Amino acid sequence: MSELLRRPDAMAAATDELNRVVGRTRWVHPVAPLLVPHQAREKQGPVVPAQQLEVPRVRRRPEPATPT
Image (cartoon, rainbow, N blue to C red; front, top):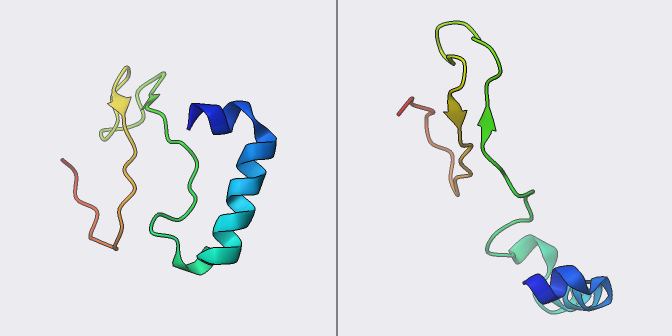
């Protein structure tokens, strides 16, 4: 992956081939941005205290959101 990120021409060729052969609608994992942990700078009500580390999750199928 790091080589693809360093070489945009190779990334474009790989993406074109995936779109042509597999098709964009049949990718196992849809394209999503890299999600990085976020941290609250100040208290955000009773749910997110200051300095709380938040890590977003991406799920394959819809599930009810429950706090963990």
